[in-house]
Image (cartoon, rainbow, N blue to C red):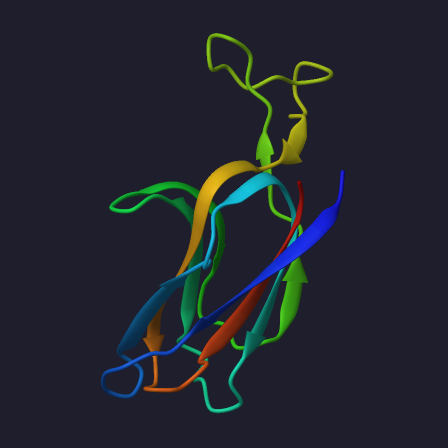
Length: 130
């Protein structure tokens, strides 16, 4: 398996603290999301919200990661709880959940809200294992 990356640059439009924008990966990703890096424009306000989802042509499916009211450049390692066949979360001791990376087979979308009108308001790099 190879580690790959995809960069998504989101440009926002609208009024200050209310501008929005969205962008998708240029090609589908098939693999496990290992980490996401968010790099914000220096003029993005601290009201900026970022939501990263798996996406097809018309619908966002599963939310991979959300950053709310932030402009701090950051690297995150999004994980989801493991589920059994009945969609019940699996625990290793009856209390603590087991987590695994998100498995994606489609486009990844980054949506931004609550920002200023900026070119490259946020650049998200998705690192995945294919």
